[in-house]
Image (cartoon, rainbow, N blue to C red; front, side, top):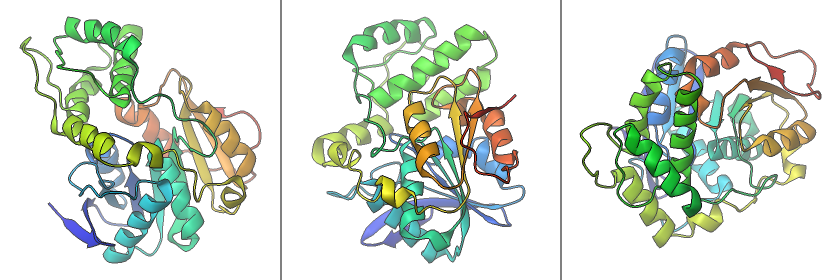
Length: 302
């Protein structure tokens, strides 16, 4: 399990494949596993793929502070330096997209191009609540019918994942079998058996992060992501968003401020489509970037 000591912080990372460099940055509550089932292996056929656990997530150490997008971008830059990655296609999902943008502002020479997958940018959109008690009991009942029993409450980010998974199954029964198997890897839950599950390591770490550090406030800090700074990101940026995303406000504002933005929309997809619909996401990565800057509504992918 490779780790690097960077800026006084132990960061866990993984690499696979050979070729031009791609760096993958997950979002809140997630970890390397978000990419490692389908997206990373496919990209590794033609690229050297590097993914990391952001500090406080996965197997990276938890620090007392340093959870702003601009702080986490410094971790990514330090890892790239450590691994000899001079320039890369950087891909970020959710808050990982904000980290990717902060990296492009701070170290533009390290960026070949950017892909932001349903990115939430704190300077452009308020963060939805991290917990939603009112929706929890309804979700618990829907999970129970599928043999998933959860002890305590799920963090809102995990609630959102399961809501999206169940909605997709309701829309197209049986079509999400592979994605359903990924649910356990995402939130540490196991379907079947009917027994209560202990909170997963990911949940325990997330609760510790929220209770013992200022991460909850620092995630919302727009430092390094002001509109003036975002206008300096001159590399091409694909904005790949689900049609059902809660973060379309971030996308629409990014279209206005980024000099070279190229929005693509995945029909009937929500926030977690890179995990739940990896083929659609990989198709978006392969879609050619238009020569001109896109200022019109997002192109819809098939």
